Length: 221
Image (cartoon, rainbow, N blue to C red; front, side, top):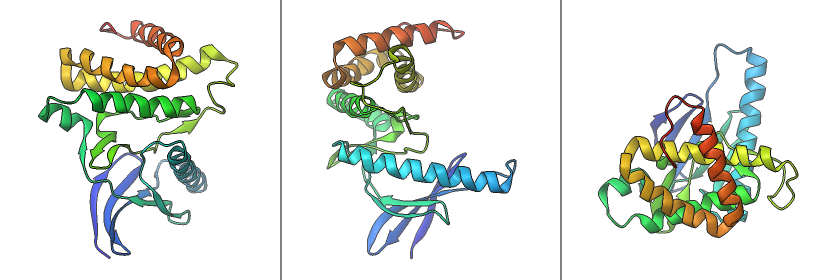
């Protein structure tokens, strides 16, 4: 089996492997030496299960995410399909026709949020534009907040959680594109609003402004 390490993060190692004749991604959660070994195993197992479950649920919601092909809880691994394409950061740096891709990114995140799923790491590099459409990847920090938007009772808490998720995306835009980020974020919000509605979008924007006002610097949203 061909195998090549292509990324190493704080929690996991990512390998590109040819498996059963197709290119796949193998994500292996690595142990943390500072944790008690038994606790470490439980944490890695739980996070592996959570990530795989949310990826499968997201596909059922009609969101483009890699197919989960295999899970090995003994090795703390998830094998998924490899998505060949260009990430949203590199695309926006290379091509001028990026607006529809950002709108589609907004729609994808809106579908997640509407179902009560928080991605947790909405970096531009976690959106892949392929010939099959825009894919959302790396659900390693994802979680579910328990319900759908139609059933949420603690509206203030939910808006805060959703706003923090989107604020990661906005901060990533600003870090990579500066003044141009405002136009990109506007396209993202157009797609997001199509899915969650104008009322919730406005609530989230207000919460993002509040969150950013508590930071050392707070560019206008």
